[in-house]
Each structure stands twice: as C-alpha cells, then as structure tokens.
Image (cartoon, rainbow, N blue to C red):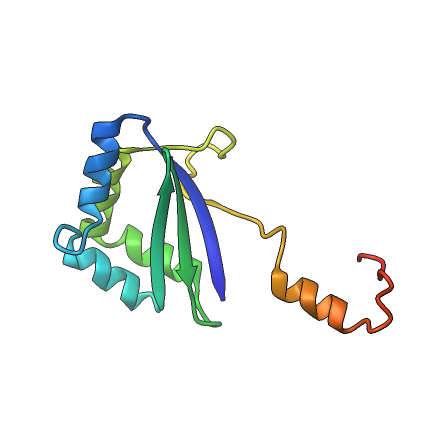
Length: 129
C-alpha cells in the first residue's frame, strides 16, 4: 500500500535549506529512522517543489496509523523532532486545525486506465461508477 501526504514549508530559502539538511542521512536523528522502521513502514520519501512537500509512504497491508501515532506520542525524541521540524513547516491553507501532513487523494492511475481499456476490447467507453 502506498500513501501520499502534503505539507508546506515556510517560504524562506534559508529555512528550506536547513529543513533539507536535517533530512540528510548524516543529520536525521537515528531515533527517527528507528521509529519509522518500528512502525513497519517499508519506505518513506519526501519530495519538494518550491515550499510544497509531498511525503510518500510504502506500507504493509497491516500498517496501523493509530499505533504509529500512539508510539510517536510516547517517544520524547520523536516529539522533540516534531517540534524542531515545526520551525520550518506550516500547515496547508485548507488543513484542519492541528493537522500537519494532509492525506492526498489519488485522481488518476495509468494502471487502472489500462486495465479498464484492456478489459473492454470493443473500445467502447464504459460508464464510470
């Protein structure tokens, strides 16, 4: 399973550069990597364009966001990291109060489009839904 989340950075080139430095392999705290792995997350990547971030999580089928949230809340190093990162981050304009990373909804899948087309050899458009 793959999930995507979005978040903004404060639109300040120095803060953006510092945020990127914190996420380099030689700067990220080992406890953060350990907490991500302990939650069962298979891979996590963060991409940036301008001040917009997109986080991609590859997850096992039995991943529990509730268990991850509970473990993070009980981990002082994760809480310290979150506070440190919040110096660089800002909520998306449409985020709910208290939300940081906002889930993104898929709107297109090439695989689904091909399967839809290939499952319909006549080439007729099937109704959506």
